[in-house]
Length: 235
Length: 235
View 1 (cartoon, rainbow over the protein chains, first blue to last red):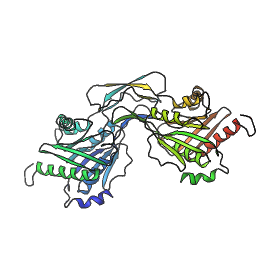
View 2 (tube, helix red, strand yellow):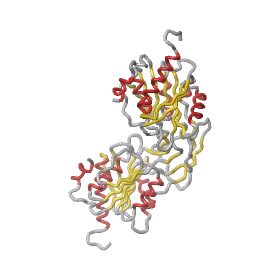
View 3 (cartoon, each protein chain N blue to C red):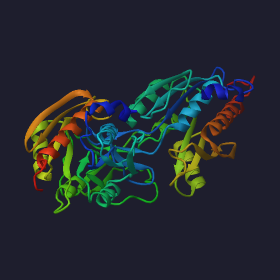
View 4 (cartoon, rainbow over the protein chains, first blue to last red):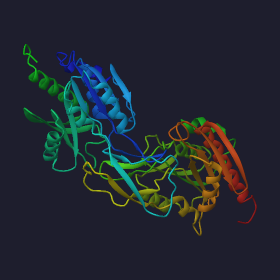
């Protein structure tokens, strides 16, 4: 439906012959068989990007955390639950990709150990020991060879541009899309506003529906790929 | 739709003139503006019970944690997010209720303090300080006067009957409905199996669809109310 609606957006299929790998949605980090840590990501932005990339002619693989969204037409979807599972699937599929878009809100931390039985209530306080999850985006950006054009997202509550620029440098990303989150903004909503930062420039998208922003972002990525390897140039 | 389908289940409106207060769904305990602790409850069982209670003639108030389910016809719904909000709404509405059904999977613990800005990733481990949430079910069961017939649920991963009987005694419940949870069982599924334990007896419901179990459970509750205060007896 989205793909059909967006098919006319691209006068030409700007990603024809390109392979795009995306992550989307939240991850769930289990505390015990029933409890988990997660976040407010709905997966809407990542699914919109996958749909648009497919409409732009790309071969699209989407690694999705738990979210109740339909798979966009023509997209190969792989469902995962935890950050470690998402990391493993990205590692498995990243070779040969032209573009990687890390749109998932991956949990930075997981419980040091998930308890097999349900944690029982007691009157006392509880200390939870959390350990860092693998950094999926940084791992892709750090590939020595066969490295895709790597795009990350930054959800920030304050000093958005500054934090996002730092993150882009620190993780070695080609392009970062930053947005402000907070009550009623960014997460689990249909509208969004993004600041794009890449080597060659800086641009604001929106505010507008996530599907419209997705089309603009995919267009910008296609432009960056074109600039990277101009037609006729040796690569 | 469920109410219409179930309207025929009750030859007579077994809860006519009764007031029923329920909780349903999970709660979310924020770690920061984007992250939270929650659990796998879908809210299906609580919403089915609310629908059935309304179909059985009761005046129904449903305090619901975050779940994407439609409000059953004739049910007064109050949406909350955290355990503390759910506790406050139950306290506000419990006076004058004939039945309280605590079906929500209330988080036993919440972070000692929610961080105002987003927690930044660092390489180091993290210690999370959790404190106990108020016990909604026990608070209702412990009311000195104007105490409703109090029904609780027990989601157990092992020794289901033993743990559930303990919980019923410890919290002072009139009836407990116990089910086994684990991979593919109980949470976020359409089917369920319950063990009912009350003062006068013990009974297994299902396995079967949650809507069918809900009808049987409401019938059992109506029977218990009837036995409590037989027609013509002084109360």
